[in-house]
Image 1 (cartoon, each protein chain N blue to C red):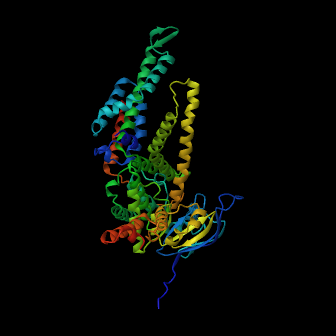
Image 2: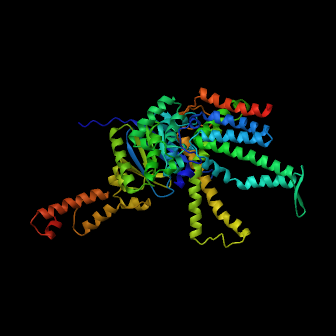
Image 3: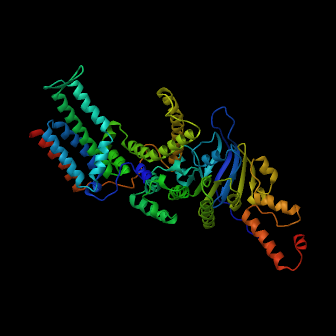
Length: 264
Length: 296
């Protein structure tokens, strides 16, 4: 089961309306959502936006617990954001004095607002990845960036690179584990080593994993060429994306919070 | 009067030389050979004899320094390379390093997308090949979750979905267990009987060599033997000089002959066991003494 989770990344299979959306709609919603989050700067509006985001989660088959786990995995970053504002923002009334450092209410407020914004990004990114298959995400991103081809951006290459990277994550992870176990079986014990030596010993893992990844890359390139792949040559797509009315409605849904944030 | 079968070569190599890098000794050194349409050819040789280089030349993954290669009547050159790759499919030893798609379905579609087929045509061909190789249940699986045998079946199906005329198997059974290897061999035999596919196969497996129409032995980039597998696999001198193993079954048959038991010369274990079984049945059916039977 753990292996399955690793392999499919964070995608959770389901048949909710979010699952059925065109991946392009979900990708395009990201900048709209970010705009809304940055436009609001007080608690009430932010909490309203958070409620909107959680409602989105609730309307899918994804459990709030899975989303909470995604947020929890980044608690260190969230704590750092709050601490950073607390230490370097001296607006508002003084809250307390800890040794030579004075903490202010303005710093605390801004820290919480910034952390709340981050929480919303995490929740939104989690919903996006929970409800979209990695290959669809890669294809969607490639198609969203397709107009940039005129500016020389090779979106088709990007799609393929993303797909291959996603394909090889579990393979390389397995390989790293295998090499690690082989090193441990030959007596490598990181815990008993000082930090500096630990870093050096980690090279014993990184070097063979990198060498293995390069060897696989060469073999894969050969196999792709043998199967008729040519860089930048036209090729058809087996899975085509189709934009429906529901996708337009979904994007429209994000215009509402932006408008509310801007004018209220 | 026996009419000689008309020659219909699909691969022609003439004086082909190939080096890995300028200044290095050639890996393929003046190879000339012809493969007939529908033929099943095994290529054998020790490590570094040039087997993998030889088959990579046929698909244009490597280009010859000198000499000519003709595939299905067309010279293999930079401008014909991509058309020729449609005709020559190659399956590599490590299936893990050939998967491009995140699912089996996407991987089967990859080559067909490169061929420019419409989504409908891809869908049709993909389901046909998946049914043929018992992959329909696995279509939505990530390649990393498959067993070794399933992975190699996907790799083979992905190449065959492109409907090549020549199938190259570069030690494609090396990573398989005994049962999967037997499945591959029986599929190869069936496919060969249909006569639709020319098979060029690098292998170290005696059973696979023995099943082919022809065996080519390479040594230091040169063809040192080219003939019927049954004849070449019995040539101890040739096998030893080419760093190949003498078939175990043949060793047993020869040892038995020295003991006075004549079973004939067989290269595969199955054939040798069949011959021994026939001999044992003959002895048990006969009232004569064992020593007498063995000296027959």
